[in-house]
Length: 331
Image 1 (spheres, rainbow, N blue to C red):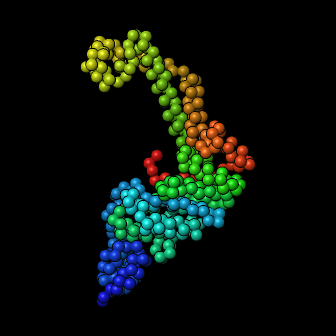
Image 2: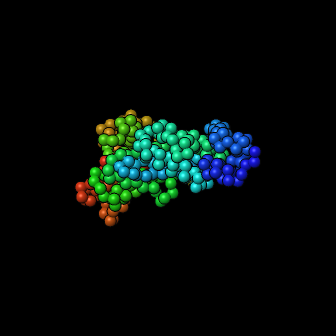
Image 3: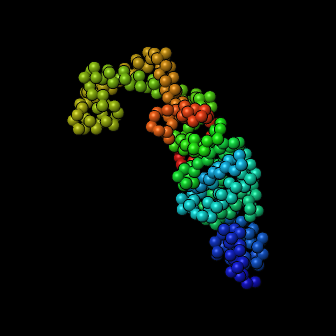
């Protein structure tokens, strides 16, 4: 049967598929819209399966708050060109709208939500993948529920979004703290919120780094005492290069290596464990200050150095109840 341009436009509006794909599907389905939609969906699934091993480093993150429920959804794709496309952004928006309407709590729940066109969210993404020829996936979902929630789409670029819930209503404070979360990448609300596994790993790193620094200081001091320049012998590559340039003799290089190895071994065996632990604790305190939201230096005040927690207290005794952050960027 003949396929009219009106039918093609109608199905294209329903599916977002290209004109040629829509015409082909309608022709094969003899004008049956439901059958044509199924054909387009199947082709999309097939293309998505073929590209399952591709990396999705671009995409769209949208955030929204409605009547005490805020959520953010991230859908990834392969290129920034597709990510910026109107149809792709509208798809992510429809998923977000459905998630908020259903007050979805998990990403798995989001994937099975019915969108306005009747498709499940994950199926709609796979269909769009078939149309674009790129791998796509629903990659992130967060929500907050309650009053006094501020949402922020960083620079309106749909690549980084945050949500912040305060103890009382203050739109300006909420917006500024949401920007703080975007800019400063906190790992937790406060020290007690940092997972124990993270604390353990950071302490381990702090101890090892402190030990390495103490040994390095001892080696540098020993080399200087022997009349050698530590900067000329700080690596095998530098030693070879400096010998070739005439800045260092082979005899000096051998002597430096002997001194470095002996000093490092002696210092390692006689490290002051109490001092190491104290220095490591200082490093941990800095880690918490830099990475816990309430302890971070507030970036959007009037110039005075003040923590986020203290700035909020000055805004009428406010405090942070919770926050969420999602970015497409590798950090």
